[in-house]
Amino acid sequence: MFTWLFIAGKNRDLSLAELVSYLQARQVIFEVQYVSKEFFVVQTLQVLDSNIIEDLGGIIKIGRVMGLLSSNQVREAFVKHDKLVEGQIVEVLGRSGLIAQMVDKQQEEGGKLFFGVSVYLGAVEFKSRSGEIQRLFGSMIKAELAGCGRKARFMGFADKSQGCLSHVEVLKKGLVESGSEVLVCVGKDVCWFATTVAVHNPFEFQKRDVYKPRQRKIFGMPPRLAKIMINLSSCVEGKVLLDAFCGVGTVLQEALLVRANVVGTDINSWCVKASEENLEWVTREYQLGNVDFRVIQCDISFLSQKVGWESVDCIVSEPDLGPALRQVPTTPYAQKVIDKLTPLFFGFVEEAYKVLRPGGKLVLVTPYIVSRSKQIVRMPLEEKAKSVNFTRVKPFNLEFFGKNVSQPPAADIEALTGLESLIEIDSRHLIGREIHVFCK
Image (cartoon, rainbow, N blue to C red; front, side):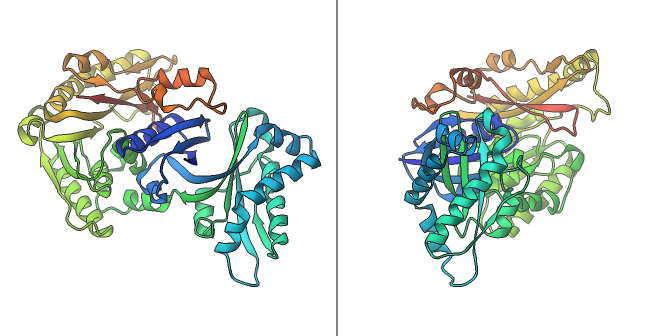
């Protein structure tokens, strides 16, 4: 068995839902052993390819676990400054192979070996100590390297509240290639430490967002979110994915990168041409070779006629979410926005069922509005989906979670398994996204 640390993006639930859906779709046998706001611990039966970071939109770093400590040891060493326990931690670090790996990967004689430490805290009691824990782990590793005859320089922060390196810093310093970032993740009972094997590259997402030939920024979906939704649809290489409201093709281009065959439709002729240009661009830019894509101008009412009955494996779509609001709406106004959009969404659900193959998934975004009086106003989608025989797919179920002592509290598991949909709210916008997954 292999144990991995996954450092989550800003939206914990969305990041975890994407990860478990991605692993399931690729028939990876796995067990989620710990969940916190900042990181997940996942055990797999087989080694994971570090390149999977390129397929994930909600994961910042992946680390392979090299050793374990108890959280009580961390407490004694870094809160109470117990020298005996500090010695025990140094011994565990030495046995883990982390130090030997750094020396092996940075063979050059002379010059200092360079390394970093990032601390992620799942236990509330340590929240104000991450910078201190980072520096003390850094000092321990530096001393161990000195014992191996290597001088070293540690990348850390003076600020006690900041204890982790950003993915950009890790990329720029080449810490993945040199095996020289140590992840220290402290949970309620267990502290895992790992070597970083992969890190999210924000520059690639920025490239596909900002530098594609055709832009539509006001209505655009970030490539990161498009990637997450594609994974929620269980799309893998060779499957046919449809975006029925494709806009400038953000979802389609991310699907091409997983070697799916893509179909896009949009009622706007300009969007159809823009999508085609962007798909041609991403094919050239990423040297995808022979790819299969087509984009059709189509009113949603004729989707099954244009695309074909039971012709696609996955649908990932974000229809119109309503007007660009300038201020937080009243509850009655928010309800008017939803009521106006409901016929479009209901008609699309009917057509989506027709074009999906049996077992196919629909990932659909609906508007999520928090009104001035803090009322949540959302699309009444459940009954409509049931009426056309869709089955809702919950993001999480109990079979994902392990039974060992480090699993999250029962209340956390109950909250996760009780979720029916996923919420994504961008602070810049007054209308959020509610992400639903249905299966035919």
